[in-house]
Image (cartoon, rainbow, N blue to C red; front, side, top):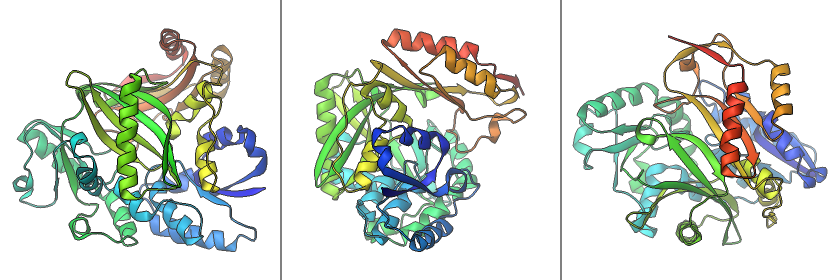
Length: 427
């Protein structure tokens, strides 16, 4: 039996991992729970780092793997913990070359310059922040480290910029302070050392076209892609995700070109022995491919999609790599031809007046066998109380579904939403 520690373990993903055929050989141990790692006002990274080491050193049996599927702070802590215990992991510096948005763009400019937008860096607390902006309107501004588009703003004019800067100044510390603590463990080049978590990156717009995410891994220097997922956006500026749909409908030649681009980047920064997902835009009209960002983890949002279509959740890829094995992932062996994660959003604040109870959710599951519903709200709360939302919407629930055509998938989602007894009152 392999002892596998999961940083930030939650019940939903625990069930996904226990359903894997190989799980009969695993003992899955929580290394802190999700509520201790993510659902907190301030990320206690020092306590998590030192506490994890202390817990693991007290463990009397062999430690075979330390894994995780969350973004910051889990994705940033994992290479430090694995390195401490001599377990397979990408280097901490290679991880930061993905996670530190400014350092990542510097490396991308060196390795794949034709696939990135113009960019710069700005200190939002400087009284002279406007003088550091050398990108024309419109542009995006966002912290060099955040998650889920938190504090990301499209800026069209000086008024938008002033509003964005004020919001960033008020809230950037939640990510900046813990990120700065972790930066001490890295060897940073001079041009990056001065840009800590209290800084923002500004980027020219690349949101024209279709967005696609490649899921893959690097094992002994070999970059492998095992799936491509379309990301469909909606809302103001088309800045909010409405669903992730698998498999991608992009042409094969475009996906192959994206694979070549990400391999060039990951090999160039020395990223090895880890999973990743890479987000791209394809501008069909101008024949351009743009790299949005690379995340050094599996996307937990895609796990049920791969299970529906390929027959396994790609938690298996994460676990194989954590155990030092080359992943052997199936292809198109699932029960459905299509699958999606739908993000149910509201664009104005409201008070939640009713949520479905367990019995109602169970009946929905009987009517829609492929459905998994995760509610983010509870009765009596305001949507503005939700943590880490993007700047333009509130995600009130996510719904996973499988179907045999895209039309059937969308129809099933519409019926399911109408059937959920979730009610809200405008404010």
